[in-house]
Length: 108
Image (cartoon, rainbow, N blue to C red; front, side):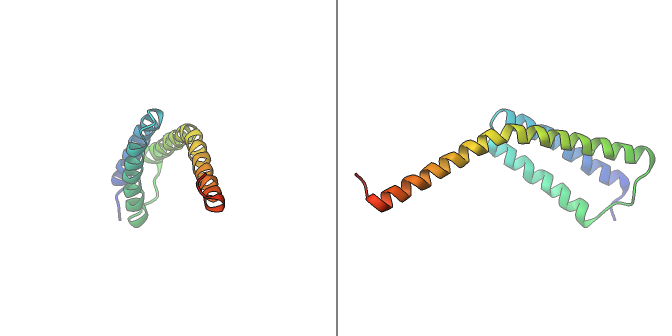
């Protein structure tokens, strides 16, 4: 079982990584964003496989604050990535439409 301090360290690492993810999304650096997301997933998996004991007092408050930071960063990342995702979806859709037209009518 993970100690509360180890768990808090994992939460702090995830919070720091999500802040870096915000910066990567702001810079449209999608490769870095994905790499950072994978690093966060490692911490999440560790917390799932070795949960800590329930926290109280200052440890609990720190955990809550770190989770709030991550949720705020996640919201910012979503706000930054949604326009890009919409643009990508539109591009994929138009490519699919173009492919169907070529298949139906051939190259003109």
